[in-house]
Amino acid sequence: MGIAKKIENALSRSSWIRKMFEEGARLKAIHGDENVFDFTLGNPNLPPPPQFKAALLETVQNLGPCSHGYMPNPGYPFTRKAIADQVAAERGVEIDAGHIVITVGAAGALNVALKTLLNPGEEVIVPTPYFVEYGFYVDNHGGVLKTAPTRSDFTLDIDAIEKMLSEKTRVVLINFPNNPTGQVYSQESVDALGRLLKEKSERFGSPIYLVSDEPYRKLVYDGIVPADIFKSYDESIIVTSYSKDISIPGERLGYGALNPRAGEKKQLMDGMIFANRTLGFVNAPALMQRVVCAIQGESADMSAYARKRDLICGGLADAGYEFMMPRGTFYVFPKTPIPDDVAFVNALQEELILAVPGSGFGGPGHFRIAFCVDDDTIVNAIPGFKKVMDKMKG
Image 1 (cartoon, rainbow, N blue to C red):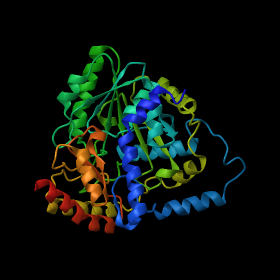
Image 2: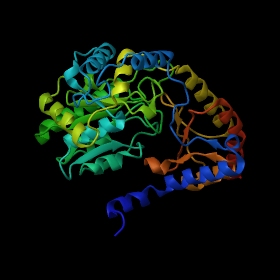
Image 3: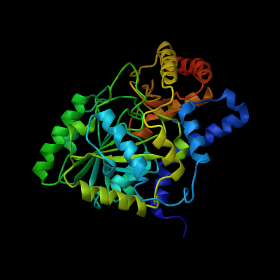
Image 4: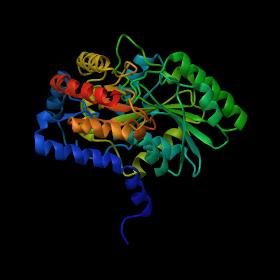
C-alpha cells in the first residue's frame, strides 16, 4: 500500500501548484533565472532591520548553559511578556504574558488554535478568496471548511457570512491584510462581524470564535490602519508571525494572542499550550525567541514594497488590466481577461512570467502576483504582461 488516501487526494487537489513550480524550475534551467519573471511566492525579498542582526549577534555571543534547551511549552516567559507589552501598546488592551503562546510561525499558531477549538465535523467559515492552506489546516483537526463570498472589492460581506452561520459553526477565520487580494478590513466591518457573532453565539448557546490571521499587519500603505478584532469581539484569537514585518519567514516564529476578555480564557490557553506540544511543535525556536524579545516593534523598510506596488500596478494599468489597488501585503489580484484563469496563467508562462491562478485561492477569474521581487523583475515583465493582454483582447 502507498501513501494514505487522504494525502493522495490532497496532493491531487494541489497538483496544479506543484506543476506551476516545476514549470518555473524548467523555464529557469532553459532561459536563466534572470530571464524568468517569477511572481509566485510570497517570500520577502527585503533584508531584516539592522536591529535584527545586532540582536542576533549579541544573543549568540552571550548564550549561557542550556540556552538551546527546552523551555515552557508556550515559550520563554520574558519573550511572552515582551510580546504582550507590545500588543498592549499597539492595540490599547490590557494583556499579559498569560494570554500569549509562542509558536512555529503563524501557521503553527493557526493549527494550535484550530486544534484547541474544533470538534469533529464542526465548521470553519472563511471569506473568499483565502490562503490556499486553510482548507488543509481545518481538515487536520477534523473540521469542515465553508466559504463565504466577499464584495466586489474583496471587503467583508456580513450578510453572506450570516447565511453561512449555523449550530455547526465553531470558528470564523479572517485574514487581513489579505493574501491574495491585498485588501484591509475596516474597523466598522469587523465591528459588524463581531456584533453578528455575539448575536449568533447567544442564539445557538455556544461561542463562535473569531480567529484573525495577521502576519501582514505592518505591511500596509497610504496611512491605513487595520481593524483590531480585540475591540470588536471578546471571543477572539489573533495569530501572526514575524515572517513579513522583519523578513525572517524561514526562522518560523509567531504567536497566538487570546483576547483577555474571552469567556473561558484559562481553559482556552491551557488547550493552546497543550496543542502546541502535542502537534509536535513542542516549543518555538529558542534562539529566535531571544532575538525577537530584544527588537519588539521593529520592522523592515516597508516603503520599498510601496515602491514595488506602484511599479507593478502602474504597469498593469497601462497594459489594460483591471484590479483593486492593494491596501496592504505584497500581492495584487487582477482580473483575468478570459474566464479561465489557469489558461491565462499558462499564457503568461509563454512570456516567461510565473503567476498563480486565482482559482487556487477560491477566486476564479483572477490571478495573484507576489511583487516582493527585484524592481528589475517587475519592470522587465511588464512588456510580457501587455503582450498577453493584447493577445487575449484580439
